[in-house]
Length: 179
Image (tube, rainbow, N blue to C red; front, side):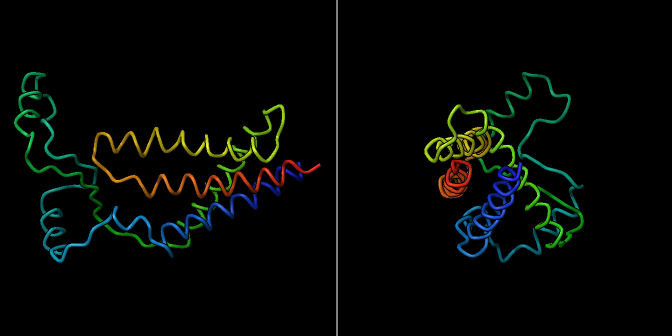
């Protein structure tokens, strides 16, 4: 149990730090958010026309028949479109968000350790490959699948998988593989 607990704590902190490097210090995700000098006008327009929620525009109105929806989507081809996450009040709680992120990272590493402990041999190679497999499953089913539909750039997320899960898998391979 001590091995699992130490593996989880060190692995979770490693993952948390590597995410900080990726999103903060190195800022490799900068292409996922763009600045506009018209942001005040955009927010004002959105606040006058939307309520809190996620929007995909254009989208057929609720209750549209299949024929109407298909026609509207065909007419939208080649025209501008947008995805909007609109919130009516911005909250800035960096401390709580960081705690939540660390807890999630600890839980993810704990689940990875549980998965690795099911292997007949827990060595360095199996730990790295198992960690990378878990990372790639998440990347392929979330980041890449969303990119197929919503034309997102996922190179940074792919780099995160290889670096973050590779390093966490290396730590666990060293730690769990010890006698």
